[in-house]
Length: 150
Image 1: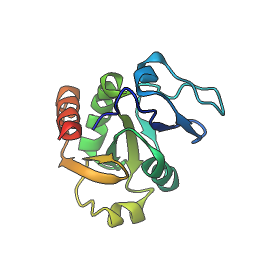
Image 2 (image 1 turned 90 degrees about the vertical axis):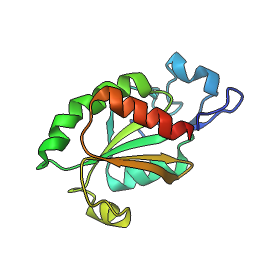
Image 3 (image 1 turned 180 degrees about the horizontal axis):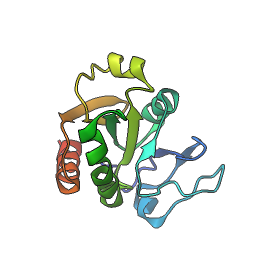
Image 4 (image 1 turned 120 degrees about the vertical axis):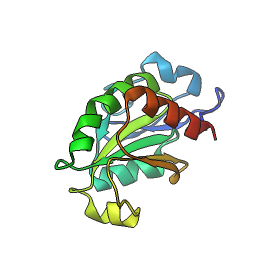
């Protein structure tokens, strides 16, 4: 579910949440936000509140790989550096996001998140795959790539 080279997908700025259009062939060239001029990709997970997550979900033209986690969860804490490492290889093909289920309990309930850590892949504004449990960066990248291609 990657963008076609001819299409200019919408990219939500990780800094100011402005919506940008970037030709797919230019995603890897370090595009910057038209509003705040900061990089659109940091190759690192983006921690979002429920409201910001919903904005990214509604407007993103690339898949969103979301790590639902909680601060009290040991496996979540151990997977955090692995998720960050996966971001280095997966962006800009997809945006990696972290959402705390403690800070967004309504969202967690709405999405039926019953175990964490939980990876969920969203494309076109809807969930297309999910995988529970901690995993290393290589497995995160392989799972997300396969799920996005399905």
